[in-house]
Amino acid sequence: MEIQQINRENKGLFKAVSDGSEAGRMTYSWAGKEKFIIDHTEVNDAFNGQGVGKKMVLAAVDYARENNLKIIPLCPFAKAMFDKVKEIRDVL
Image (tube, rainbow, N blue to C red; front, side, top):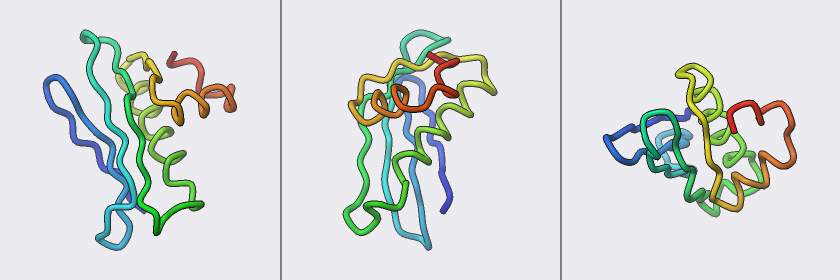
């Protein structure tokens, strides 16, 4: 599975792709130049239970770390991931 990032001026998304099919997407909005808000995570039914949402959140965390950014997880799924996984909270 590949996680692709599409970054635009005000918004962006992480898209999970498996064998040419979109497995899920996680959208975000920029809150200034140093923060982005994860606002929605969606996994296609055919990929439920395969960790797609988690992979997208971890891709966002990697992106934040590489670019010295902070994340505001408004999406309930992303917030739950940050609540469960201590090791990724450094980007909050």
